[in-house]
Length: 94
Image 1 (cartoon, rainbow, N blue to C red):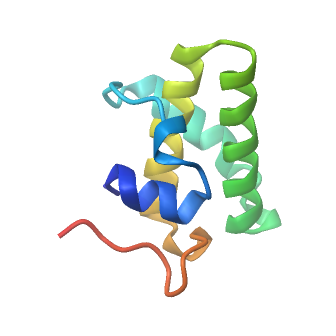
Image 2: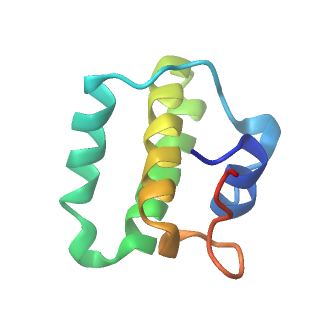
């Protein structure tokens, strides 16, 4: 899975804006599946949807939802490196 620094670089989010501390669960897989229904729009569009929803959760003061979305975003970018913003795609955690 991507490190926090890698996630920041490829998503366009500041490291300080990332809410951490959630472990993956079946709920996260279901949430990711719902975003993958939009994959026909392209992986970049799905990334943008996830980032927008994450920012909205932060704005409305929903840190648990933001943490869930962050975990889903990390998994999505790990599964679909072509969705990364960074030149050359996501760097895999070695």
